[in-house]
Image (tube, rainbow, N blue to C red):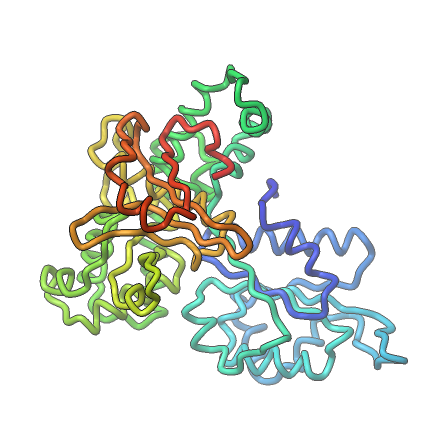
Length: 409
């Protein structure tokens, strides 16, 4: 497995008694990480077992009783002596959402074997995790979310560690002129076109990249539709395409419903499902009045730009696209999400449509604001006078396609 940014945090969490739950969209690499963690423990001589719940026979056994899991473990858990486990068993479970009652399964094992059984599990859908985890399992689990590859990971998957190091050096030394600038731009345009699904990134042929993305749309999205119980599949895909065309714009559920012929309640449900299956994120507006913030529309971004492009059927060269600004804005959202809690990322907009793309609230700092332009020479601070006057503690900066801090935003 090629290095993923989340891996170190997951490996560090193995020593904690709380269960480790890894969620994310299908095909983002959860199983690969799970197998890597499993292999690491095995290489250290730890007692670990790997269980895939796509195996129907295993699934049937575990649905009968949580204790059935020990049928697949050669070493049985022993009693706790003086508050310490005499041995510890690591049980890796892939696709835990397939259990009829994953909440009860995990709670029972945690209550019975808190110190000497550690569960590390993946789940493809937060929608399923929410719906099936009837017990909150508060204090007994930590949920990690895996996204498609970030741009840094994308470069590593392309074996361009030198470029990553060069970009990091540029940030430390502002006067440094990189010799990799052309390569960075080439890779960025590729990322803005085909996104960060690992299988897509590892494929060399452009035609195959497109086929893999088509399969993600036609096969894996349909699995999501089937699992979530959506009845009007054709209208769901029309909605998804409309949302793709509105990247970085306000999501007006009433307008979407009128366009497609769906009531607001159904549109709300479909958008909720897309969030819970990790395909889209919504960010809320920034206001000093919290009540005002909660009554305004959200802005939408896709968690993978390649999926967004395949929904639109558009893989044209980025610099020639009319939506290149939306692509770049979506890119910066995914970069910001790496460094900040998504709930701290907002946008600002007034009734007369003065707008700032991103306002980031930081708990221990003053926060900051970002306006994304294809070229920052198009950025004129006078246009944002009202924001600057109202929120002077949030310094406003411009980011463009040529920004040297492209990996550290």
